[in-house]
Image (cartoon, rainbow, N blue to C red; front, side):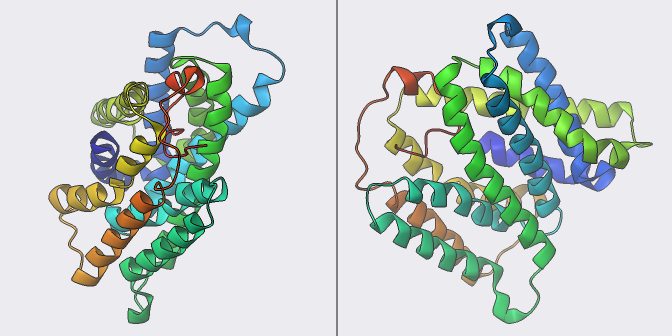
Length: 282
């Protein structure tokens, strides 16, 4: 989570230079190269029915990354993460065995309202909209990642989908980044790619092999709070007490939504699962 939010916070300055699409494209492209070099996936092992899921996941990752970066350019990082978190929380609730999980989604929605403070009339609705799109993408990403994890082990699935994500982001990124290529931009993009997606996905995979999905999901709810802290430290983004209360509500709702789920240890399928499957104990 620290790698995710630090990578996001440090991306803001690059977004100002090459745009959200350009940053997403450069970062994902560098990450794709790194994953391909490390994993060296065998394309001969691919089957015909693998293509739709791999393409769907890759396109989702690309669009989600572009939308998220477009959001943090307009609204604070912590606010963006809180709104985006509604996506995976809603997916988890829909697959939950208890109706109570839906109540936690509503509670998180109240928290998001406190964060955005619409009654003040100064909400940046475009930024909120981008964060909402990123949230939908995050939810779809989790569902598709679960299916990819059933088919591929280790980081093979990532090595096949991140290049697709980079190609998707290229549609937005190449026009925005054209004319802005410098050694500093390229070096920054590679450094950010190491933080996100390379280290992030790798660390999540290591964590999932050692933790139950419920424990992972409960800790995962801390991400909006980490976003607020790094937004304050790196980007000097201050939030009001009402907004901080909203972040706290979102965090508590995310953690509470995991209660009542079975605390079973990861099985063979989950032990090799790709990042993103942890928050969903189903």
